[in-house]
Amino acid sequence: MEKLFLEKSHSSLLTIAISDLLRHAGVQKKDLSAVAVSKGPGSYTGLRIGVSTAKGICYALDKPLISVNTLKAMAHEVNKFNVNSALLCPMIDARRMEVYTALFDSGLQEFKPTSALILDEASFAETIAQNQVFFFGNGAGKFHPLIETQANALFVQGISPSAESVAQ
Image (cartoon, rainbow, N blue to C red; front, side):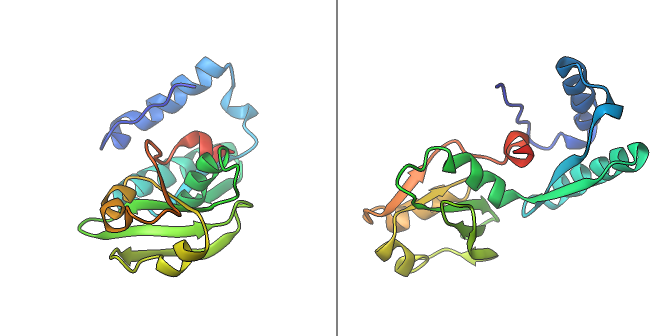
């Protein structure tokens, strides 16, 4: 499946992309049973535009709106390849050394809730000492140099929030 990822273009392209997607899939708007949207954490402007668009579609079509935690959707993406039942730690960059993060088990149950965290060498130290942990997302790169010698800390590249994971 091809992914579309464009920085800072939601307001001008989102409704066009939705129309193109429906047309390409051969689906009429009236055939939708619900609309799923990422509820965050993430870019305030991106979330505001996405949620507002989804709410408008749902209101116009009288369909339910389903909100999905962005970090859980990212964890779902990595969990497809989690053969050793490692813990899953998505990270979204929040500037400087801060990330939005959560920790999920291989059943996608919340192990640690979503929070903002300033990263340092002690971050997740107890968890890593006892478990393998996959770190991923655009915030994980700044954590890697702090704990790269830890054998239980595994880093996955190329994972970003996706509509496919939100839908699943």
